[in-house]
Image (cartoon, rainbow over the protein chains, first blue to last red):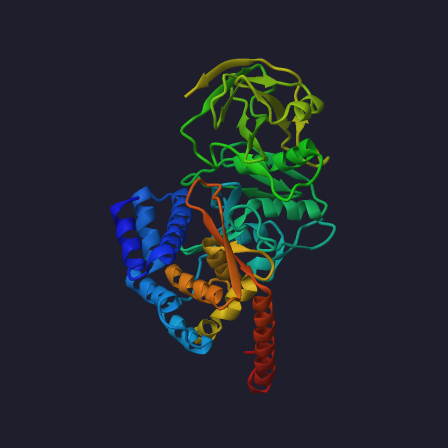
Length: 360
Length: 108
């Protein structure tokens, strides 16, 4: 914990004692951790992210005053407290956004692929899509779509982050691009993804280029969504929650590199998936990568195994899932099609040898 | 919308945000900001005293769950049965107020 954070927490919890102080410190520490991760994902350094989060939390004396009123002052009427706490809120109106046509600013954040809402709307309209209503329930009418489709990015709240995200760092709002794919799918349109860096998303006749030259992105978080149906098939049922792990979303100091040769054609996208058990949950560890120009596939997984046992089919993977015997775990190689018109999200690949395996 | 109107209905906004699903602080803040299209933009630290007060009043309960991102545990807030009753009462009061305001220029 940095000195600035420690000072903030001490000032915010001053006057609180015992378990109340500990509980508030834990909650504010969690807030700092979560928000810093988000700001860092949007390009801020660790130091800048910390300064931003502390500023967004507000003056520690103000937070402390509110907490003392709750935790130490004899109980007041709800109405009286509402007035006092309401007075500590600072409200601002949103900034007006300029509309930009062309490539859509796009930022990966954990499992989501955020696209900037105004540039997305401008590009959709340029491509002939009718966009009606506020962004938390846009109704999209695609050219040649079978029906208008309404998206509900906040309902239900799923995953680790909201699929609609107002970023207080740059005052722009972001929407998960995967909602666009689902909307096009629901409208009966074909979906195709071309390229890896700054990929082009084809939703029927509508074309969206994600990422810009100044702020490039890649197709990782879109292909990664295809692994959801795979995990459900492995489990044999739709679980309440899927536990997925990879180095993009959850960095780890321990990692293994795997190199495969002679798989598929350059540009095709594959996933290497294995599993481990953590606190009774089956965690799907995976990485997604395109075949490079030399025909090589390189994957990185978030733990050190002396070797992976690649299995050739779903049945074998289901039987061996979650087992870790003498440093060996079952893994499967999937080809992730870039065209999901047929509904196929993944194809299990026959056996390949891991050419190289390095553990850090 | 007048900022004071939103400010005066903080409890309603927080309780309604938790009606469908438990949320932790950061999620709740972003949920409120999303649903109010950015109008309800506040210093984030000021939300925690409000949540703790609702918890002390018995309208919310909370539990700690491990963070999948490796950070400190997250405190998830849930509506209690008393919280649901209180939310329904506040929603009815708001509806009545909104209806009463219609002759004077539309909904509140």
